[in-house]
Image (tube, rainbow, N blue to C red; front, side, top):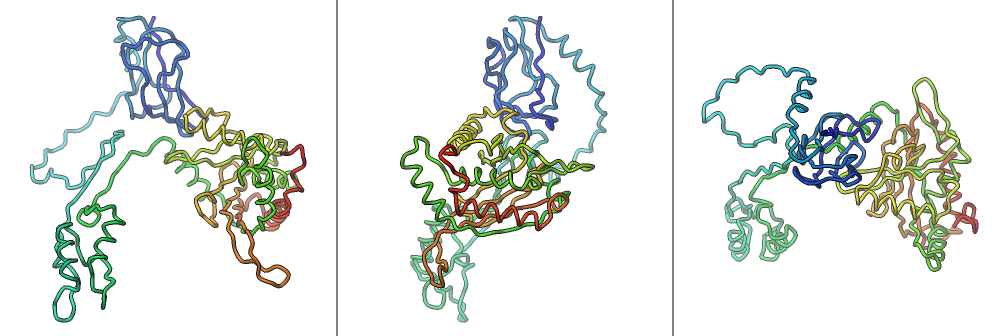
Length: 427
């Protein structure tokens, strides 16, 4: 007997899923435990396994298409088995679609569209371009009406179909010379379309990006955020990391130190490790730290459970394992659920300081900037130093300014003196 495979509910908040790609096609034999498809939920892209043995008889949701939870994803059964009755029975369950009124046919001239939009549900990017006429005569001219560009620059610009007026001149009086044209071509990778075409690409919003948009929108507009920034002297942390990495089998990142120190600081400040639940405020006795990880166009936040009880090496191992799982699309709901506090670190991208949006249901999120060598004042003298800026975003319904400041003071002390939270058993 044929078995129906339905769109799974891969998270508590998932209402629809998108098939990223099918790994089987109609007619293929399928065994229980084999991967049927990759499905985009509102949390992550996950591999979906078959629970049945048989032949894939029908695919209800094609590649790059979205479907509500519990709709028919596929049908698996015996080879040659008829699935018509199953589909008719399913169709009879669905609410009758509203009959659309016929639309008047537009005249041929009116039906032309300069910028076509993608059809609803389409997952194919639509490339739209409009050629802009350009001419060297558009170049700036001096008071005498002559173009302020050298003859060689004009010639080169004409060959590349460039507008000289868009290129800054380095010659006398802003005159455009050959070098200016060459530099422009170099930095635009030689693509004259940079200046001769207006273009854009439109892609349907993925399930994960929809969830991120909804989540951060609700957080930003319902949680009264305030921000506290503090500068950290990172010299001791840099030294200790260097020493440990010389002998450690697994290399530690600065973020591993920050996760460990944050967990220790949360143990001393339980009011920061909290959640707003409407009628009550939940103060969590356990410390589960979410660590933001970028995966292509999206963001996932796997959770380090009981982070205060784990060593640096354990934290480093879990973060690397989560990053690999995210890359391989193997993250499971248990990997991203249960956070009580979140850390977002953009230091590796050269960001010195930023503010982050609170990750519900947490009351706070810590934004970590990059470590930077700067001149500092020591004993009244200017000397080389190493600093790090951190910013705590707080939900004012749960955390007051003084409580947030006290937490940052403790975290600052720990990061500036890592020996305070790193015993031999903590490495």
